[in-house]
Length: 412
Image (cartoon, rainbow, N blue to C red; front, top):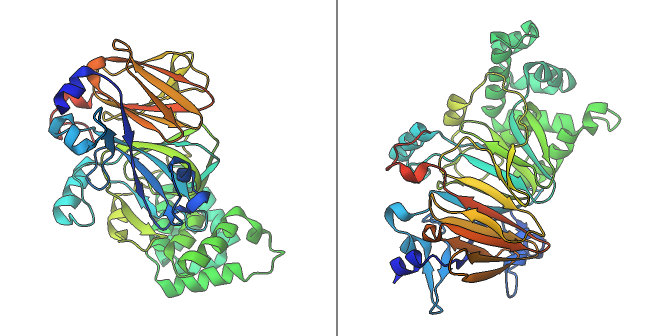
């Protein structure tokens, strides 16, 4: 029966799985609340998962009225190599300061600690802002870190003698001296003990209000997050040494392996390899693995991220250009009519955000109607689907060249 449905090539409506993490917006405040057909629970609605991950597999609606897990519908090599998520972030919490392992490290961590690293896969991901989004991304340039230590001399308490010497000796170039400053300041802050962090944070927050440095966006962030996580959390001082990045609605950001980052607020759609491996180090009550994060972070200066570039495939449809093999992510714009989506490489997922959409098989004309939060599985057998929208947009995730490779024999 399931094989027949996939071979028939008709789009199937899909319902995702809500994850109730502490950092999610609560109840009606969450962007995910609009996906509920009935009463919205008054709990943190943090993430909405669409995919085949065992922690939260989506379910497809079958023609006979029953529901079937995508794990059952798409077993083995048919399983989707990617997940699609919607995140709704409570600004009083933010996400943890974290990074994602590359493929080799993911396999090593899973073998060593399968409880905290449940997957053998890496987790490259792209996030696309639905509302204004802020995040911390990578370590500030060495020159900016030197300015931070001048603006907040309280932080010198956290720095080793070697790091202080590196800051004083920094020559302004992007070579080894810059790397020494970035590594030293970041590592010393993320490894600081809670009592030292508390003294530094309280010293900064208790400054006279007319102090210019205390009116910065970073200090406002520390003040807010300290109420949730406590003044001794190393994530608070680490926010001063990471880049603050803002995304406008529609902007996409690609996050590769071994890049420290943390979403702070806003709502976004994410697409990632099918993995839940996260190396956490701050602003969380979950398992922290500071040692691994420090060892795998790249300390060479790479600069601020740019919005992920897009390629226009038709007047109404564009895809982000991403250096990954597991997935591609495209967006069908509002007001589109009969946009062609090719599923030759493998099964795809479509997610409607805002408004309404219709998706039909190019050959069979079988159609599913989607509203906000509605999703559909597009089996590869139909090859081509047609998507129409009104005031909403449709995110389409489909495989890259991963499906032509076997097992884990692909680039990390």
